[in-house]
Length: 149
Image (cartoon, rainbow, N blue to C red; front, side, top):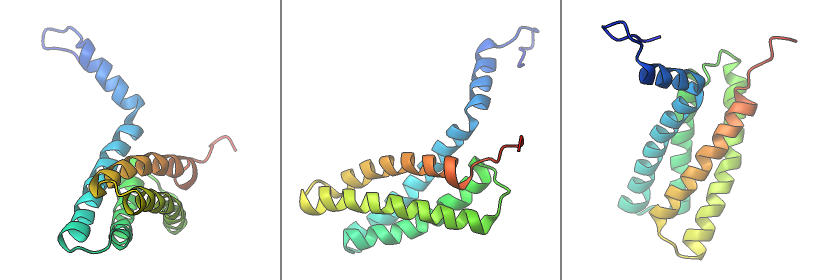
């Protein structure tokens, strides 16, 4: 419990601290997801807008870099995993391959076929992918083993 100098408890700070502790994993995941999103958008913009590399190729290159970054920070900071790193890495990449196909499909349909704005669709796709990736990471890749077994 946090207390003020005059001995009174600081209810708001205690409330916020309690909420953070209850939701630490999702909060840290969102922060890491945001960092991955920024990295992904910067690399994608550099490749597709500055270097004029095809959007589909740019997305795959971006994906390879972003997935490695995401695995590293998710394993260490979000899920604090001490499991088999090779197994987790393989599962992580397999999950990301699934979401890559989802993202590629979204980009193909909305940018290539329907001619929507490149960066807007990439941003929307990233939000969808962050949510799907959390579900896969939490319940498959970094799932906690029950200690009751």
